[in-house]
Image 1 (cartoon, rainbow, N blue to C red):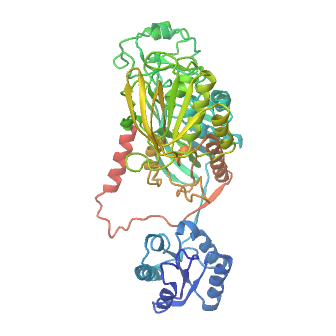
Image 2 (image 1 turned 90 degrees about the horizontal axis):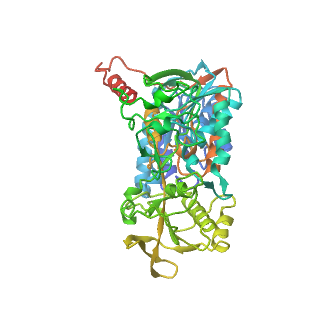
Image 3 (image 1 turned 45 degrees about the horizontal axis):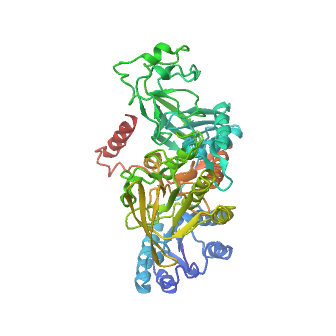
Length: 602
């Protein structure tokens, strides 16, 4: 057996905190090591050629590379082995960049740890055996999880390539958060005007099966061959029979808060989310209905001419197989009730950005008139507070949510366009306009529409009679600021949705420190996950605007089609096995998985 050891300097990434020459020399004395070398960039063409030449010269049959994470270049070095006729699985990579150099500043300690890792890798390499990849067939259908704009775009792209696609949406209609928006920046396009045609196309596309009120509860299998269980909850209204006549609405005795309008308007227990909802069918909310089991009120059923109402509907489990999966589970606004210092929940006229979207929308509870929730009067002064809960590692979200500067600027413009003589004031930390025409949009608001921008963090929001007192600091002038407003709008940030958390747990997808699904590589594989055949799109991976979301959705769809277009795939040979001689047969692993699956099916 002859092992080749190769240590990468990675420019100064590794060499600055690891004595690479020293560990190369010490590695020469390890068992079975025939050659040990250091090179500035092992992943470069000259670095790869160095390994290839040594394989020929020293008849090497095992390779150990001490460099960066195997997530980066494991495939690169495996290809080197394959080019020289070696089995790609007799390669061992030691991560001395992320695991040593990047987390350590002491060169002696870094060298010592690197040598310990390298020694272990050499001994492990001696025990490695060649593995053979397997070929499997591919099921030529796709699953898209989440019916927001990301899921809609991904489903349409895959279906348009000729592949059957199932789109699963947890709520009663597709459209996601975008369906609640009035306009989109920087063009101020009507959100529904550009979203509704895509929603209708999804519903009519012959290759798309839409499952609303549904959720994925189990995923098994591997790339090209995923077995999925989908729980479909009852709508209590037969979609194909409902004609949207609305005869059921007057007779329903229940009044509930309308979630689509952020609770600013009422709805009945039987309702449709909004006029453009897809599927275009009413739904009965079992939590609001006077009683379905046992059945108490049947007034809606009695007046339903098409006989579309069915109180006997039950949840059902649908089992299907897919070749590829796209996770597009969207986001949730940061819980505004966490921001007690800004008065939400106690001061009636302090609202969230999404609340404001419904107020300013022509289809909203005030038909586009900007009115204070407390008394229905037109606010003469509105304060928009950026980064409400964002960029605050001590108490709230540590990260920038990317879209808040722009949507607060949009909100201020919308206010000025409706209340021409009103005063719009934006409190901001920094204005971030990282998008096409975003800077011009901000400049237009500040210069042409006379929106006032104050650079500073608001410290307190207090109720003062029928107005709101805002206290803060202008960090440009260094002066404290106190002003009164009639309404305050909080630009809350983006957090992972419950669906994102559930799917990450269900599919064993890695998440980052903030709970968003982690990409296989943030730059080179932005839509891949660590699990082959499962792709991600939209705000499931982190904050982003609509153009970036749509682009990423199309990218994920393209990747999925790359799998679906093949008749068979080579799958990794590295799979887990059970060592019967060591297994105690307590079946704890099996019972835990079964228990989790049972909980999700309830």
